[in-house]
Image (tube, rainbow, N blue to C red; front, side, top):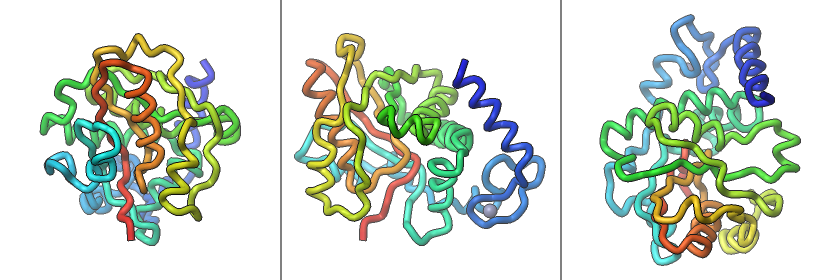
Length: 235
Ligand SMILES: [Zn+2]
């Protein structure tokens, strides 16, 4: 019920606020939903799902078994497209995340990316962060993918500790910082499944790695793939 109200609140906010493209700032026309036509066409799509052993998969190579990994668009901090993530995470626009994820999933589903996948699992947000933000953006992204594919989105993973802010930490420190932050309350429901773990952005891969390691530890027979809306280009 709360979620239903949040969706309505978000839709109402969409109607009341001037509808601007978060990327270029132009006013959206009635048929444009989240991004203007030009920015959507020029979205720097990674197309990583078409490449075997792609740069996102390489983040996990030799660390934990991953079937495949992809993300919708490249994320660069100073690039105007980074504003999409800012809106989804910090400007109360989770529905935008859901709709973009739905579009993303339709695009990669056409190439067979979801073949064999049984369920979508969003990276959880610790309850203290959830209370502050009011929503988990990854949950909305998973829901958008569920809409496009008909696959179930399951909140199977729990966040045991809050993530601390990671932006100033090195890669190894980030990894240590994310170890043990996830738990799986009911491991049986994932037994024998191929799950797609979903997050808003992948940077070093520390968060997704921590989650994937935990899933491999807790579930005897599981296949794991990964999908994010954005993939950071590491300098
Ligand atoms: Zn635009």
